[in-house]
Structure formats: C-alpha cells, structure tokens
Image 1 (tube, rainbow, N blue to C red):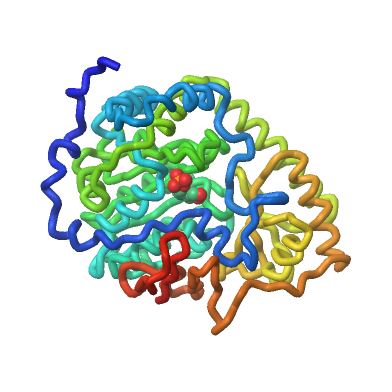
Image 2 (image 1 turned 90 degrees about the horizontal axis):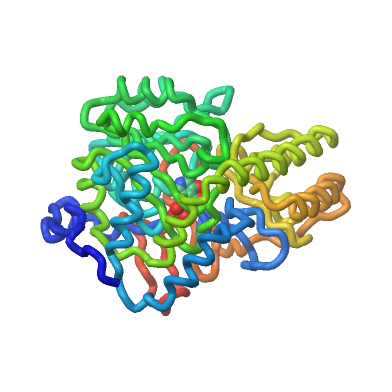
Length: 428
Ligand code: PLP
C-alpha cells in the first residue's frame, strides 16, 4: 500500500478557511431521490416491483462488484489517494484538468451545496416545472426565492422564459434529460442561458441521466471556463445508487465556493474502486443504454397499443398520463405490489414510472391494465393525519404549484423533535 500520499486537492489543504457564508449554512439538509420517491407511500416496502426511484435494476457491473470485494480488507483506512486516482481518471475521460473535477458520495451533496453557494435571499433559484425537487429544498434552506418555469411544449427547459422570470437569478438549474419527464434540453439552449444570464449567477446542469439519452453533454462549456457547474452520478446508468459516488465539474474558483458549504469528507473506498472499474468497462454505457432503450420502447409500444398517454422520454423513466388523480392509480398499483413513482403538483394526473427490467415492466403492464379498467382500486391512502403526509415518522409538506413551500424540513424552519436517529421527525 505504499502510495504517493502527497497528491492532495487544494480544498483539503485549505480546509480551515471556511467562509462566513459557509459557516452560516451548515444546517443544510440533503434531500435525496429515495426520500422524495418514498415520501408519500403509506407503507414502506422493498418487495414487489420497485419502479419508483429511478434505480437501475442491473446494479454495479461485474468488474465493480469484484473491485468492491477486493478492497474490503482495506476498509480500515481512509485511502484518500484513491479519490485522487478517480478524479484523474474522470478528468482524463472528460478532457478536463483534474482541478476541474471533485468527487462526492453521490451528486446530491454537490447539487445542494452549489445552490447554497450561489442562491441567497438576494439571488433566486430558477428551475423547470416539473423538475427535480432537491435543489428547491436547498434554495429554501438559504431563503432564496424559488422560481418555477413550466417546461416548453416539447418538454425542454424554456430557457428564454427562465431568463425573463428572474433577472435576480443566482442559479439556473437545468436537468437534461429532465427528472421526471426524461426529456432533453439542447446544448444551444444551455449555451444561450449561459450567455444571457445575469452576472454572478451560474448555470447548474444536472446530467444524471445523460448516458441513457442521445443528448450532448455541456462538458465543453466547463472546459471553456464558463460559469457552468456540471453534475454527474454513478447512481444511474452505472447502477451504483447504494454505493454512492458522484461528481461535479467546474472552474476551480466555482468548485471552491461549492466546497465551502460541505467541506471535504473521505469517500467510501468501495465507491471509489467500483466507479473506477465501471469507467474502465467500455461496454457498460452503450450496452445499458441499449437495454434501457429497448425496454422503454417496448413499454411505449404497449402503452400506444392500449391507448394510454405518456411523455416520450430518453431516460430511465417517463411520465404516464393517468387521466385522473394519479395518486389513486399509484395506490391501486401498490396494492398489486407494483410501486410506481410520485406526482408533481403541476401535473396532478401524471405519475412517474421508472424503466425496470423487461419482466418488471410486464408486471407493470398487467397491473396497470387492471387498474385502468377498474378491475383493481385501492382505498388505502397515505397516512394524512392533520392533512400532512408522513413517512416513517417524517412529516412531509408538499410544494404548492407556483410557490416555494417546503416539502421537507429545511434549515429555514424545521426542528427535530427529539426522536432517536433513524426515526427523526421534523416539522415545518
Ligand atoms: N440529480 C437528479 C436529477 C436525480 O434524479 C438524482 C437522483 O435520483 C440525483 C441528482 C442525485 O443522485 P445521487 O445522489 O444518488 O448521485
């Protein structure tokens, strides 16, 4: 294990230089996809068909699994040089200098920290609607105005409307392919956003699902030193959601500001070696993209044949138009052990469906047919005492259309109510 330990990032050397703004933001709570996906469920389960949280049923590739097993005996060490090795590997693959790349245990942390670093009570957070909600929670935590702009007719981000809606913007969040619609926003639209945005703001591009799609990455804008922060994760096509590895790319001065909000923590070495092995598997991305695309097309063909409406997607999820309260459909599906995803208040008749395995999607189709033809209904709803949703003791507040009400407790207002860890209860 005699490795060169002298390679260390600037942030690790300068970890004591925490800014005043950063120290004020330490209460930032990280909101994740599994929290959001399972927030409104009346019963938590891991059994049945789990197509609610955009997980990849294939899991880590064989080389990643082997690497995890092989590194396990060294789990007593922090092994921070493995972080540097992965940073260099990613940087080389993306044509970036290593100082433009930082890795984290998943991309949720850099997403929240980017918002906290560049949004504020004076600088708003601008996002698409429907869009991935996590950044809105971070914006609320730092008391930034949340501006939600409806997607365009083709379900891309309406970048001109986003610019017009917030001359005071600090962060424009663009998720492409978008969660939940799986639709792309073109490179030229993002370039336009970068060109026209207010001074001092950033464009935060989330490419969590880019590998499933035909989309063009904006990594070239990072290379060109633009005010762009780019998020990637190993949770999706690489199937490592439970192993936890993600990355953020950007100019080092931008990354330093992001890191002020979360500091630098050691990475799980299992995640590092699994990510590294996954990147070396050159067949992984094309093969999994093909598998996901084939299953998705087959489901879309079935939906078409049966007269159901959906938003065509380029990702591992899509929005199904249930033509009635989507909540009723979600509950009825759950009663058949098929767990589909959540609703966005702006589209109350749509439910998000993750593309699972071919077999899972057959079960989905069979269950959906029963539910849509009225053969199965569900009277069981989520626990809504006091009009609030609850998840295992966690009180959930839902966003209202067009405003920035909190879903989950944020640093802005919530308070723990003294329950043991793991069953914490927060109220807003
Ligand atoms: N960004 C988007 C759009 C997501 O959907 C998710 C998770 O589903 C994340 C980021 C964060 O994923 P992770 O923290 O697992 O990397």
